[in-house]
Image 1: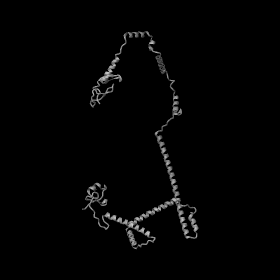
Image 2 (image 1 turned 90 degrees about the vertical axis):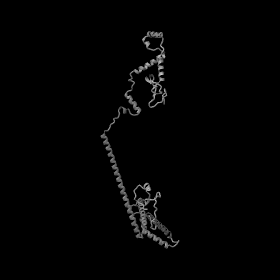
Image 3 (image 1 turned 120 degrees about the vertical axis):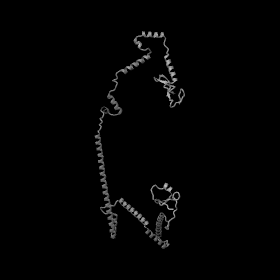
Amino acid sequence: MSCTGCSSKFGLLHREYSCPNCQFSYCAKCLKTTVFVPKLGKQHKVCRTCCETINRTTASKTEEIEPPAALQKRMDALNKQQPQGERSAPRGDDGSSLRIEEIESRLQKLRQDTRDVIPIHADIEERLAKLKEVDVSYYRQPPITVYATDAEKASSLFAEVMHKVSIDRRRAQVIKSTTDEMERRLRCLRDLSRDSVDSSAQEFKDGQSSDALPAELQQSAQTPSHGKEDPPIDEVARLMSEELKAAEEAAKKSVDDLRKNKELMEELRKIKTKKTSTKKEDDDEPDSDDSAEADAIVAKVLEEARLEELGDLQELGLDEGGEEVEELPWCVICNEDAVLRCHGCSNDLYCRRCFKEFHDSEPHETTLLKK
């Protein structure tokens, strides 16, 4: 921006000012004249245009036309002839006099003592109670608020904590008693189921030994003994599931042992060769399907054992005949000439750059490759 008077641009050394009268932007050189500003009621530095305008208005006000001397003498004579009361009251029409009387009456009412007009404290309380829809006694007799001391607060807090602790103790006792009762009932049910199973087994053995009473055997098998209850269904199902799990684990363990036992695998291989040599082609035999399934299972087991042996030989660097496989001295990453062998990475070969950049951060045992 630039100055309105001299059009010079504002900057760090050429600051911007505002004229108090017209509010335009000027520099310090253009705001030199100090004049009394009527709208502000103080003297300020204004621009040249505002200075001329203010001086012109003040000069016009001072140049008022004075009345003629003859008129002035006549007005003075009339004022002397009028009495003091009439001179105080201004002349005017009936409307102006009525207006003056109204103003005077209002002024007298304002100057009167207004103690009777001010409502008493009881009226204020009643109005406030009606506004808030509460009883008047709430304001006339306000409730007394009692503040507890620190000691009283601490004692009440301690009592509350002790009450909660007692509730927790009672709850723990109830839970313990309920748990003991449930355990006692469960033991009773287990004893009853065990006794019922033993009694039914004993009756079944007695029935097998004596064939003369088949009707009594059926009746004893269908109805339980007097004074004892049947075992619960959930308990029997749980026992059966536990037995099934134990049988499955035993079967898995036996299969693993069978695979690890090399002597047994050799015996199975001999049995298979013997069966293939002595087998006859007969479609009418009922056991042909079972023997075929058994042969397939044995072949699968032998193939898995052979694959495991091949894997062991490959880890040792040998082929199936036990001979060492010729290893190419190349890096497993970039196919450059290998320099190091890492025993922690299945004896892989690495060049120095690949081993430094791509090898695992964990320390592995390495040896130099002999060429």
